[in-house]
Image 1 (tube, helix red, strand yellow):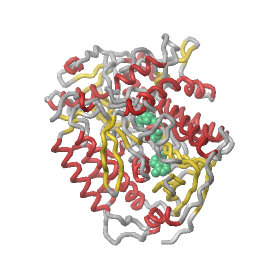
Image 2: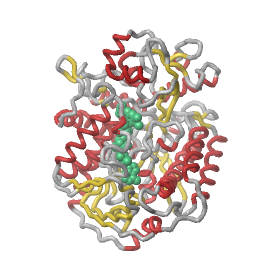
Image 3: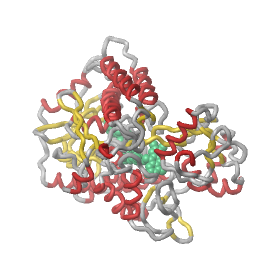
Image 4: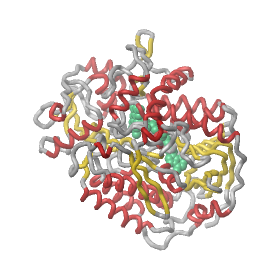
Length: 565
Ligand SMILES: Cc1cc2nc3c(=O)[nH]c(=O)nc-3n(C[C@H](O)[C@H](O)[C@H](O)COP(=O)(O)OP(=O)(O)OC[C@H]3O[C@@H](n4cnc5c(N)ncnc54)[C@H](O)[C@@H]3O)c2cc1C
């Protein structure tokens, strides 16, 4: 199938329109750059941002005195020694400015007694999380940024454009090649600077809180373009993802806000609160960090003390109807429509893949070491080390987005628009132009097998045997995928899209599993049953690079490396 090729150019190309991408676009445009903001979904509606539930961690000190250094202390403690301190510091120090700018842009953070309300969340030493009420934080962040994007001069935008590869030319990133999903046509974009803001990878797992667009594209794009990835073994599982009874039209991680506001009790099948067995009594409060809570729940299930569907119970039965309604108003009606009355029923919850601490290795300017390539948001690795605190991800997306937009605009201002050589785009264009394979490759089945493998063998509790088995399965799936795409390349050809997604998902899954196999200790979200406990020699980050068609790992102490910059 032959398509007309579409072309575009920009000073700054931003790939992905979650909080990070939209903030990057706004910042680059207000610094004078012509920006092209693209997304494989609709602008501002495709990834995690629009789904976020409640918390945005920031040291505003609106409830009690606070300072960004306290937020940093908590972030570093949660990261279990692996945080890239300059990135963590940036997140904490510049968070307040972004949050207040969002307020000026009309987001409407929840208020009490004339000040912005701040909730306490596990791992934070004081009330630090701002929110928009009734589970509306993510939609409000997204809507606010979409409105500013629409009003800002110099931002062109296009949805339905899935980036297939970055273009590398003369040692620099010079734009991208994308697939226009609505027509099947290839699109070649040349850019002086490119920002990858494509979010995380949790679609790799069977039970996840992700959208279909979160299969780790950005990690694969950056890696193939030569950028290093860091901390890829650290996948965060959200401990209390909804399991049962059936819940339609609500997010599986909605119980988090309930716990912030109402405490709730996490119980095993004997009706016991069990957190104290794992080091921290909860006593009706919400204090366990995500890595510890995930571990505790899985161990209770393993010991035969789990709920019927393989999780544990979360109970608000001690809360009155009035207290529930005061805290969650319309959400209680939605639960009633699902026949869930929290005053009478405990729900079942279990860990669910939720966020990725790892990602592209950047400096504090969001540069990757490859000229022209910047990264923002969840696509960046290192700021949260081995475990992320509640609320740090949205702040990270805003702060890193703004910083990446600034750096990209500055780079663009001193760079000429690259003229793309045919050789630089040929491989990606060939993938899109290829006629359909004559085999019956079932791409949907390959996705399911990969998700099952990652959940069963590269989940929160890992062993050498499981990880080796996962790597063998991933290798087999990669061979089955082959090098020639499935599908005919027509409009909305989901077989072709699955094939392109799998090309990225398998590469990223391989890096996650291989990094997990190499880290022979347990730390934060990475728990090796065959290597319990943290080891001082692993107080270091793993950096992965794609060289000559294979992944090479190096071990680096990022905190020290970046402090020396
Ligand atoms: C259900 C849920 C609830 C959450 N709740 C909270 C919370 O309360 N507090 C908190 O701090 N964090 C929360 N998080 C995490 C947080 O929302 C994310 O880490 C953050 O929003 C990521 O922002 P981002 O801009 O980096 O990526 P995203 O918002 O995920 O945006 C990435 C965009 O890139 C696009 N994209 C991907 N690949 C391509 C490609 N190849 N070509 C073009 N476009 C592409 C996607 O379509 C998407 O629009 C939550 C996450 C989830 C999933």
